[in-house]
Image (cartoon, rainbow, N blue to C red; front, side, top):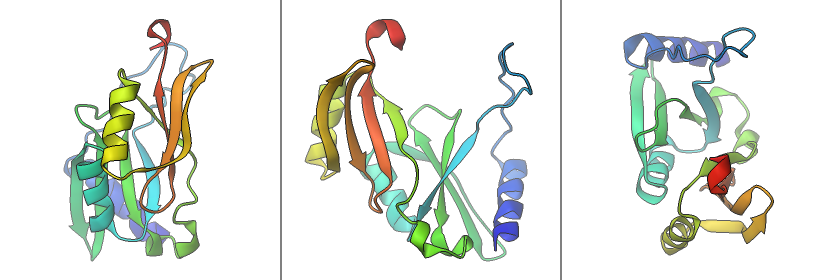
Length: 156
């Protein structure tokens, strides 16, 4: 299954998700992070959550050989896309909700937090002031954790 998924990712790259070429001098191998994967039970349900609740936008939605490749990103930001991968592609549905914590920066923590709470987002760590800024941690529909952070102005 994973080989089919890798083929689908490659096809998506050729069919509409341009390769990123931004690099820095300190990048030893000129690597650029372009996509990260979150394992979900239902792609349509996840897509609705990421768009309607978190305010992201759909970037890619392709189906090839019966497999669907869906990505989202924060509105206006396309440098890193989130792949909403169906659990059975990996053969291990137990991986749903077992992702690492993703960090979403905001320039207005209080407003972002209030909107997400109003939309029913479950916060597992309440807002707190930390050395790197104001933060709280929430989970998506499947338990994947996200840190919402407003960094001090000098660190953005």
